[in-house]
Length: 434
Image (cartoon, rainbow, N blue to C red; front, side):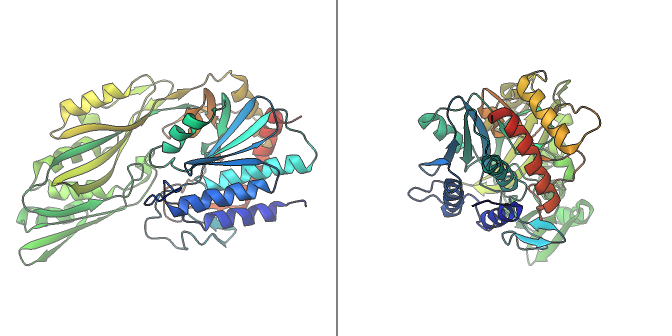
C-alpha cells in the first residue's frame, strides 16, 4: 500500500488526540496512561512500514530500519499541560482555516510524523537505508528526561543524529539549562498560593488567599492583579500569557504580577520580583552572555505550598561558557531563601563546519529554495540533541515564524507540515539512504 500526505495528516491527528501529559504512574506506564497510549500508537504505526520496534518499559520506544552504523532521530511524545483559553479543543486535532490545532502540533508530534512520513516516502520510492536509522521516541522530555536515562541503561545511543524539536535552519548551539527550587517558610497570613504548571512554561495564571491587608489590597490594581475582600481575608488573582520558558519575553508572567502585589506586605516577594521579572536576573548578577550562545534568560514557572514552605521552580538558560555551579552560587549569595539545584542539561555545541551541520544546511536551503546560504543558530531551548555525541536540532520552526509551542491554540498549518516533510525527506535521503 502506498501512503500519501493525506494519510500522514490523519496519523498526526490520531496521535494528537491522545492527551500525553505526564500523569500518575502505573505498572508499565511510568509517565501515566496517556503517555503510554501515545507510545503504543506510534510503535504500532511504525510497524506497518517495516520498522522493527521495541517498547523500553514504557519509558521510551525505538523503531529501527536498515542495518549498519546508527543514525538517530530523537523525538518526544509527551506534551506540556494545555493551560486555558483555547479557541479550539486542545486534544481535538481539528482543522480550521488550514491550521491543525492541538497541544503537541509543533512540539513535538507534528515534526515526528513529518520525519516519519519522509522516511515512508523514501521506502516507497525504492531507496535503501545505507545505515540503521533509529527513531527514539521519548516520553519525558518536558519534565525530566527520565526516558533518556532509562534508554542509556538498556540500549546503545547513536553517536550522531538530529532532533526535530526547535528551529531551522540548524541549531548547533544550545544553552545550558538548570532548574532551581527556591523555598522559604509560609508567611503568617497566607493560606494558599499557587501559580504555573511547569517550570519551562511562563505561567498564565496565579492566585493567593491571605489575611486581609490594606497594603496588598491597594497595591494589587497597580500590579495588574484583581483583589477581592472576603470578611477578614482576601483573594488575589493574576492573569498572564503563556510562552515557552526559553523565551520568557514572549509571555506575560502571572506570578510576577502576584509577587509585585504581595511585596507591599511581604519583602521576600519583592526581592523575588526584582530578581526575576526582567527575565535576565540583572539585579542579582545573572546578566551573563557570550558570543556563541548569547544572553542568559530565566523564567519563574511555578509557585505552590509544600510542607509549610512556599516553593518556586526557576528555569535558567545560561550561556555555554558558564556552568550550573556558577549559577547556583550566585543565586545562593543573592536571594533571601533556600536554593536547591534541580534537573539540568549541559550545553551543546557542534562546530558549524561539521559535515552533519553542512549537510542539513544544504538540505534546508534546497527544500526552501533559499537564495543565500543559511547559517546555523544558537537557542535557549533544550532538545534531545544533547543526548548524542554529535547531535543538532533541525526544525520545525522556520525563521521569522511565530511559535505557539507551550502556548494556547498551538497549531501547525498544513502548508508548514508539507514543507517539513520536504525538508526532512531531503536531509534523511542524503544522510541515511542509498
